[in-house]
Picture (cartoon, rainbow, N blue to C red):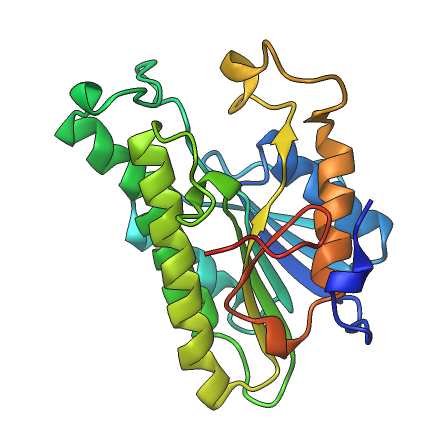
Length: 251
């Protein structure tokens, strides 16, 4: 349930068009479904294979977080009709080679850390580079990227998960930077990070054992929560990170 008390009292218009980078993942697909269910007429759905959910509203496109050329091409495809909302629903906790988050400083591996940063920080930053350039001045738009509460420095009481925590903290700083920069030219812009909670997805599956009852959120519920949060944000809240309840995550 979204805590609307933390959000703007004036709800921004629902987007006519939106883009979801990472539409093949659990949350990404649910975000596409949620946008369509609420009336979004055009949903650009990005994945590595370029295939999106079967729906006439969906416009699938291919992109690779590690390939700026593919991200630039995706942005060019949307240039004539840029989306009013852009949501980066990507992220990695366990690498494809099964390397998981480090529980101790002794397990830090430079190559693995670089890969985590490339996927969790640099990739979303490159998406921002090309998508924010499309946004018209004088018109409201929203850019959001999935972050994580563990990226909060002041809220870090457990330590560990070094690369993942650091990559999300760096992402949060970049989102703040982008918000400050865009506020000068696009005063109606909202640029934020979103913490979806612990979602039942491939990312969290290896770490679901031992979770308290009710802590695991279904993708469709997570998407509904996040869309509700985005709808209630105002430009004054740009540059911050919000959780699925609408509460601000401390820096």
